[in-house]
Image (cartoon, one colour):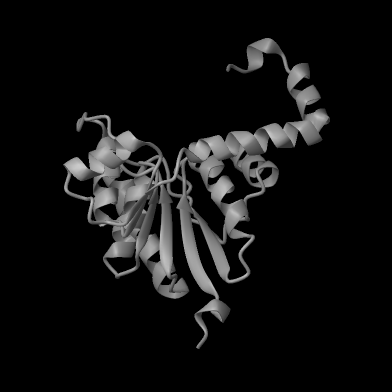
Length: 210
């Protein structure tokens, strides 16, 4: 079979609000490929019906194929249930890779569920470190990097962190900050949708913060 004619499948797992924004930037790029299918899984870690719909509508993110609605639990209960549900999805969908972002419980759960059934993990924002292991997020990001097959690092410092941990053998790229791409999209969006700026201007100053 001609590899160029094959359609590859990736599953993107998101759950926290910042991950919606980050995933939007990559999803828009993935949609340009005729040979790549992206399936979105929303774990529900941060769930607000109105906020979630705004993210998917205005940021042009594909509607999630799965919404696990897992939230408001302890770290262990949340991560464990996510692993159970995500493993079922991965076995059903048989993706060529699983894409995760950042350092949330959703990130770690997806990485562990995928790597244990031999599905390559792609970690966006790899190598970031606070050097404070009392933070759950620090544990999540370290373990996810170690479980990944491909790492995309936002800074040179993040690449250096991987080398210090002996992870320089894992394919990695200095890709820059995905939030920069999201910012460029937002600037273009507001330039072409002035009514959106008016809506913000009309909001009461005490109803939001920057």
